[in-house]
Length: 457
Image (cartoon, rainbow, N blue to C red):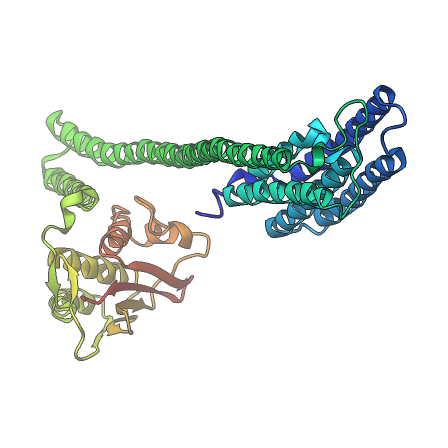
C-alpha cells in the first residue's frame, strides 16, 4: 500500500527535474540582464568579467545537469538518485548565487533575497527538514561572505555612487543584513514547507480516494458481470426446469385423456395407468432433486453440521445398493481404510452423496461389470472414489457432466429415466463443505468419480 501512495515529491521528481533545469536557463538570462542593467546605471563600477564568468559557469553547469538528467531517465533511476541530484543542483545554485552576490557588492547588493527562491524550491521538491537545512545553508553562506569581506580576507566590490564605501566594515550592518536574511529564510522555510506538506497530504488523500473509487468500480463491474451470468443461468435453469416438468405432465395428461374419452380398451387400462404412474414417479424424483438443489443454495444449509463418520455412512448406503448391483449381476466391492477421521457435514447430505454416485455406477454398468467403492485419506482430506466398468463418458461430455439436467447421449440411450440432477447435487454438496469433485473416464471402458472433503479440525 505504501508503494501505491508515494508522495508527489517521489512520484514526479523526474518531471520536476526538467522544470528545475529549464528554470535555470531563465535564471541565467535574468542574471545577465541584471548585470547589464547595473553596468548601465553604474558604468565602470562592477567587475564585469567576473560576473559574466559566474553566469557562464552557471550555464555550463546547467548543460551538464541536462545531460545527466537524460542519463538518469534512460537508466530508469530510483527516486533516491533523483533526490541526490536535486541536492547537487541546489547546492551548486546557491554557491553560484553567493559568488554572484560577492561580485555584485556583497553587503551593498539588494539581491541577497534571491536566496529565498532556493529555500522555496527546496520546500517544494524535498522533505520539510531539507527546507530548513537550506534556510540554514543560505544564512551561513551569506554571513560567511559578509564576515570575510569585513575581515578583508576577500576583496569587497563597492557599488560607488550607490552605497558608501565603508558600510561593509560596520558590524551593525553586517549583523542586521545577516539577521534579516536568517529570520526571513527560516520563516519562508516554515510557511512554504507547511503549505506544501498540506498540499501533499491532500494529494495523497485524493490519490487514495481515486484508487479506492477505481477498486470499488472494478468490484462493482465484476459483481455486475457475475449478476448477469447468474441471471442468464437462472433464465436457462427456469427454461430447462419448465421443459423437464412439462413433458411428463403432458404425457400423464394424454394417458388419462385416452382413458376418460374411452379410446383405451378395458384390458389395456391397467397398462396405461401404470405408464402414467411411472411418469408421475419420475416427476416426484425430479421435484425432489430440485428441492434438494434449492436447499443446498440456502445459507442455513450448514446449521445441522456435525461430525460425520463417513465409513459408517458408506456402509449403510452400500448395503442398500448391493442388492441392486446383484440384480444386474455386478461385482460390487467396498474398500474402507481403517481409522478414518470424521468430517464436518450434514449426515443426510453424505448419504445422498454416496447414493447418487453409487446408483449412477450401478445404473450405467452392463451386467457382469464391476463397481468398486473406496474410502481413504491423505494428509488433509478424506477421499472417496466410485469406479465402474460401465459405458464411460465421452471427452466432450466431461466438462458438462456436473451441469444441471445434463445427460450424455450414451447415458440416455442406455437408461431413459433420469433427471440429470444427480451429479450436480453431488458437486453442490461437496463444495458446500469445502471439498471438490472430479471425474476420470474413457468412453466404453468405465468411469472413476472422486471427491475430497476436509478432515475435521
